[in-house]
Length: 552
Image (cartoon, rainbow, N blue to C red):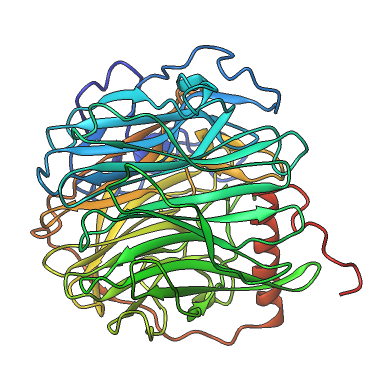
């Protein structure tokens, strides 16, 4: 169910029994070879409706005026479509949550702006404000926000309650002459009520594009904050860029490359975590070209023992074997997280990484897998698939570890989908384990119809878009999933929702063991992985990879 102001925006959340009843009412009649009408067969008894935790709407109607971006990039804007949330929980007061998301998503990438939400009652009610990162949010050349679009916002909070966020902002087509690209940041010293002036961590023109930044407050050295992203060029390089603040985000060092995979290669999806002993670990996808259209990619980490001054060589976790997600009936693509792994640190310093992976079904579709490290990221366990229903596609995982040591992974899957090509019913789940061997699952939301999501159409068809990532945090031993969910309303296609999983620790749930035995990777499977890398990257950057020698 949805609590709070559910009437103002037509917000709807479906439950399994009600969905099955509706489908039964609209189902077929008698057998196809009957010569006369006959009564429809009795509908099967629906399964029990899962008990859903209370859910609360985070987002609100768009604050942006028509044509506020004064842009020329083109495309269709989905007004009131909120996607891709990131949030943090104040450790000083766990009732204080602060989130950020894309507002008014464009079909051609990015959004008209970024909006933050603040809650002081554990997520039940929220206030919103636009960030002055883009023109629609009040950005100008004077205040550092004179950009058409924003995307990839990320939120963190220090152990003394300072919230900080980063995002990318850009004007013009990616890497095109006259285009601009920046990573911007802001901080709040009062629990997200007010935000300090925009800081430009990096700003490039024409031949550079800064992508997918994340920000991490150091829980060990409290004054330190770290930001990391990939910086692409028109000559097809893409090193990991890094900067840090040593004064809680008041000032930032000059950004620099901390890992460069070389010409025609790149990283993406960098994110830093800090271990209890102060070691920094940066997780990323390492994409290596072996020909103009052939690639390998892996999930790797680099480590820093000195707060980011120096970094190790990459340490391998696993091959990327994602094939991406599509509507099983129409084959319309879903913009998922197939090149976006996620990482979380346990209280004992162990680390968990999760990602999409098709290795356990021979490349048929993606599932959700995890790997863990108990030695600071030096070695990693073999991947294990942990989504309970392995026969349907599952995508966009997020991982978090409770103080109790319970690890949880949230994700979408197509479990409730039907053969009706006009709908794409989707659930949101939480899978969790106290030991990494036996897993239980908990329903968070659904079914909802994914084909109401905003559609990404260019630079290449990217498909239904709820975000490259979603949010999962905790307040004590309660998981807090935050995610984008569709509405059956073309004027309000999506909202950001939070659904505290209050019953996880007490619910009786079926336990299952993750899948750990994978068949050999065939050449056909390897080609599907390669095609997915090419598609995902071309969906972000036109003509990717750029300027590769044709004789390689």
